[in-house]
Length: 574
Image 1 (cartoon, rainbow, N blue to C red):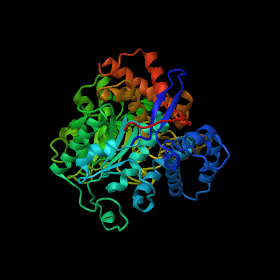
Image 2 (tube, rainbow, N blue to C red; image 1 turned 60 degrees about the horizontal axis):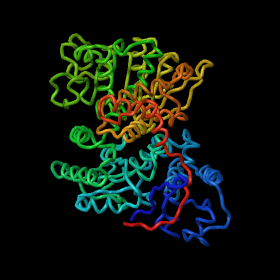
Image 3 (cartoon, rainbow, N blue to C red; image 1 turned 30 degrees about the vertical axis):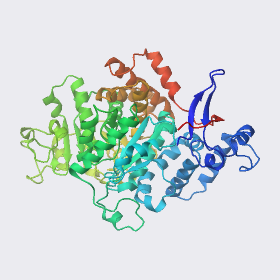
């Protein structure tokens, strides 16, 4: 049963919630609970009289109270658990606290702490959020969706838990990722929390630790594969289309072999994108655009080594290739500038392990003739760095310390300002620290990382590294696609988003080495991204025909600010 609906008073124009629940049920609804901030009128009309202490407080005083409690938590996992509990009690209060302490709390509600939380999710589970779809309940998907209490669903973030961050298969314990991504959609993009739905497809797990854990709450069977898995995904998508035909769906943390297949199969059938492929690639591209501006260089003047050709690495490589082509290079000229390295070493044409999107990224075998190799049967990272003379080094491998002092020093030989993106999450999986890059480059290297690192005082000058967080991309892309009513999400929209983000970085920030905007500006960044996406959708015939200023106006109007709405009692017609 829906617990409330969005309403506008036709006489006064006042926005309010028509509330269909009363008393204790109202206090237990995280979208509706105001705690001490219920007015006297609301306490009487919604049957709350006597259930609350007589003092009436404001949202500001509540924020001060919960922040005081937050500060008493002794480690990051306890802070994560506390914030999750707060979100379960009151979404407006949770999001107001999060926005007021964004830089402090984003690493708690998402990377890196969310990885630690997912590793222990069955041990720290309190209340459930979102929807779990399984082989046993997929036949009831319409009933499941229609039973949701929220007034509508415009945004869905879905995972099957097979490739959570750099941690691998976490089964249904991976629900922390869709929940966290929804939190960032709300905090950064301003999407209303009551229209967002995190979903996990629990199809089992191949993780022995979880299968043997007596407290694990997911399905204790090996992962569903092949036709049975594809049929479940198909039924899920059809259920989404029937029940939420205008919703945007974000694929999140699927394994490589299914991520590309799902994206290709459904991107034309439903408004959707894959953040690990497109979002990561687009964020990294924005950082590289800023670095080119700092260096006064072009993409075609650089040589890129990308290590780890999963979803993120392939997405980054495809975005770099798109920029090289936009600068006027041919396909073959672009190929010569990208050196993609995976488990088998440098990707070469004819490699039987190559997958579809990787083929244009594989080097011609003639291009490596004459290279000096440690092992003639395999071209490893050290061989590539020594022979290809890269100026840009990108890692998405979850192998800590992969970018050794020797590799960084060799890279520094070929550019006065080499670019290093060490993007693996969480922090302990990072390929190198920013300080290691600055040690190797005498402070001249341009750095972005997957998790946040503290500034470093280098010879009296403060050096900063940007966190290459997809938070800069996906909330704005999602907001823009929904506001402009796009029929699909295209690669051109992500390219427009990258440009909008890079243009947001100021000269003063560039002087400190930042390649992306500061987190405090994330809502304004999301507006710029959403507007760029809407303009691209309009110009390509996929979105509403709005003038630029109209588009910016409705994007700003669409951003929800955490506050307590006015309530009026109503009777549900469902």
